[in-house]
Each structure stands twice: as C-alpha cells, then as structure tokens.
Image 1 (cartoon, rainbow, N blue to C red):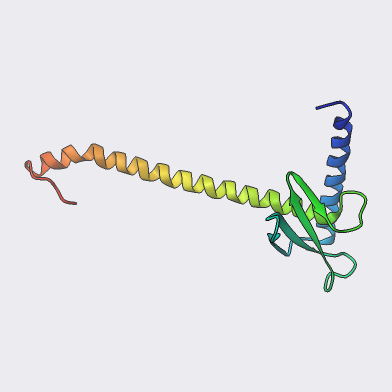
Image 2 (cartoon, rainbow, N blue to C red):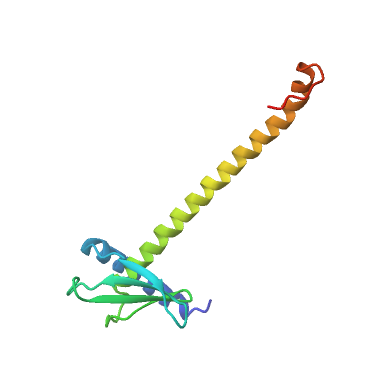
Length: 132
C-alpha cells in the first residue's frame, strides 16, 4: 500500500464509522435486496431520510465497494446501513457454519463409538451379529 492511500483509507474508515452511527441513530436499515439484471451486482434497497415512505436509495456492491445513488459527498448512512447488514449476515453465516461443523463432528464421534462397540456386541451375543 502506498503512503498516499493510507491516509485516504483512514479518512474513509472514520467516515464509514460516522455513517454507521447516523444509520443506527436514524433507524435506517436495509429493506430489500436482490441482483441487477444485466451485471448481476448485488443491490440493497434503503429508505431515504427525507421521505422514507415514497423514496428509496439503491446501494450497489461493486467489487469491495458500496455505491449509493444518493447525492452525498461523504460516506452516506445508506452505505453505512448496508455495511452493517453485510457484517451481520456474515456473522450469522459463520455461526451457522460452526453449528453444522459441530453437528458433523458429533455424528462422526457417535459413528466412531458405534464402530468401536461392535466387537463387544458380537461377543455378548455369542458370536451372533446384533442387527441393532
């Protein structure tokens, strides 16, 4: 990373943090999501602060950037709301993956215990295999 981009990223980070704070304070949150028909970019629908009942902003995910259609010159609260939505979704997905991994490990241990128990069942049944 060049020295010219380091201060810029710091400024963007602080702007993003302020945008997240504004979004939380104003209760701005993602109301819908989908994909653009031609480019297949992910898009998020966020209500406008001025007229939340009739006006919406579209925030697109372009690579690693969030692009809002509003006129703000700094990182807007719409982008802050989408950023938080993505963070929460990633955390939920990670938690779900951990649950699945734990369940698979539990099943593996049960199968290993059953396999280790099989010779004992054979002996207890007088040489007859137990079908259970």
